[in-house]
Length: 632
Image 1 (tube, rainbow, N blue to C red):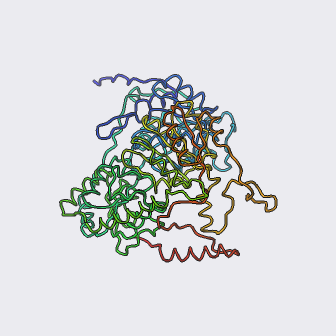
Image 2: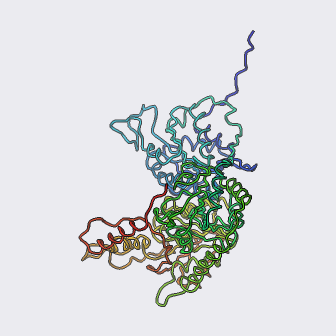
Image 3: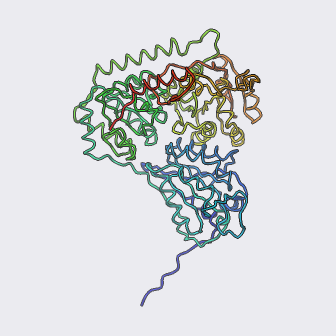
C-alpha cells in the first residue's frame, strides 16, 4: 500500500509579489560573513510597472526599501557604485516602466557589465497576451513579433530572461542570484517583466521564499601553475605587479602588500586597482597606465616579468600593446576568470586574488625568491624624481593662469582624511586621480574607467555613500560631465545622502580637445563656445554658466572658488555640512600634468588634404611601427 504524500504548502502571489518576497530573503556569504544580497530597490514608475511591481512593493516590500531616483540610467550607476563599495557582495535592484524607461538603463547596464559589477535590472515589457493589439511604446518589428526594445539588454547583460509565465520565476530567480554572486560571471542581470505577467498569479511553493545564502567561494590555484610561476619569479631581475580591481573585490590588499614587501616587487595600479596598496611603500608606484605617472610607466617599460593580478589588461594598461618594451618580457596572470588569465601569453593562475597571492608568496619564499637591492634602489630613485617633479612643478602656481586641475587634486589630497573616498569616471578627472591621488592611509578611490561613462559619477557617489556612512565622499567631475547628469543631486537632498561634488570648470571637454589636437591638429567642437556667425562654427566667446546657482536650485550648498586657498576653505566648510555640497573650481583650461610616457593607439586620418592632419598621421604611423607589439 502506497502512502499518500501530503501536498506541499503553496502561497498564491502575483509574479511581482513573488519577486519582491524572494529578493528580501537572499543573502551572500564569504569568509563566514553574511549580508543581504539585494537590500534595496530603485525605480521610476510608469504604466508598465506601477500596478505590478509598484503594488507588490507597497504590500510586501517592508524589507526592500524603495529609493526614488530622477533618471533610470542614474539609478543603475548608483547600484553599480554601491556594488563596488561592497566588494560585489551586495547589489541593488532597479525597476523601470516600458519603453524609454527601460532603454534609459542600457548605458548603466553596459557600464556595470564591462566593470563586472553586479546589478539587477527589472525593466517592464509589453503584454504577452496581445489582447490589446499594439500598445503604447511598442516596437512593431516587421519580422520578429516577439522582439521588444528590451532585447537590447541581451548583449550588455551577463544573464537575460523574459518572464512570460509566472512559474518561470522558479528557475530564473535562482539563476539570477547565482550570476550576481559569481566572481567570474557577475555583471548586469536583466529580468524582463511583461506588464500583464507582473500581475498574473500562481501558486508558488512556500519553500521558494525561505532564506537562502549564496556562498562566494575563493578558488585556489593549481599547484603546478604556482610552481611554474615561481620559476619565472626566480629568473626575473626586474619584476613588476599590475594590480587591478580584482584585488579590491577579493579583499586582497593585505596579501598584495605582503607579496610586494617580502619579494621586493614594485606595484602599479590600474584605474580599478587604484589604492590596492593600502600602506605607503617605496615599492608602491601608484597609478599605472596611459594616464598613470611616469615612474610607473618607466618601470613597466623595462620589466622582464609582469605579475598581473585581477586586471583585464585593456589598452590603457597595456598602452595598446606598447607599454612592455623589454624584449624578454614574460607574464603571470592571477585572475579568477580564464578569459583574462590567458591574455598576453601569460602563465595563468586561475584563482581568487587573495588565495592566489597567499599561495604564490609562500611558494616563492620557500623557493628562495628574495628582494633585489639594486632594483629596489633604482625604483626608489625614479620615485624620488617623480615626487620632486610634483613638488617643484606640477603643484606650483603659474603666473597669469588659473589653478590647474592637478593643483585641485593636490589640495584634495591634503584635506582628505582616512575613510574619505574620491569618485571619478570620465574625461581628465580619472586620469588625474590615477596619477595624483594618494590612496594610502585609509583613503579610498573609486574610478570607473572600464566604460569611461560620463554621468556615472554623481549617482555612483550616492551608491558609495549608501555603502559607507562614514567619511567624506568627494565626487570629482568636469563641467561637461556635470551638464550631462546633475539631477541626482536632488535625490541626494531627498535621501539626506551627503556627498561633496567638486566641479572643475574649464569650459568644455578639454580632455578630448587635447587628444583632438594631437591626432587631428585642430580644435573643433569641444569647448562651450557660442556660434560664430561668420564661420558658422562653435568658436566664438565662451558661454557663461553659473554652476553654483544651478546646484543651489537642486538643494545643495554651493560655493564658487578661484584659488587654492579658497578651495581649501571650501572643503573645510563642506566637511562640516550635513547636506550635499557643491564646490565649483575655476581651473586652467589647457594645462595638464606630465604624461606617463605610455602610448595609446588612436589613429589619425589616413587621407587628408590638411597638412597638420597629414603630419599627425606620419607621427602615428612611426609610433605604431616602433612601439606596438604582440605577446603570445
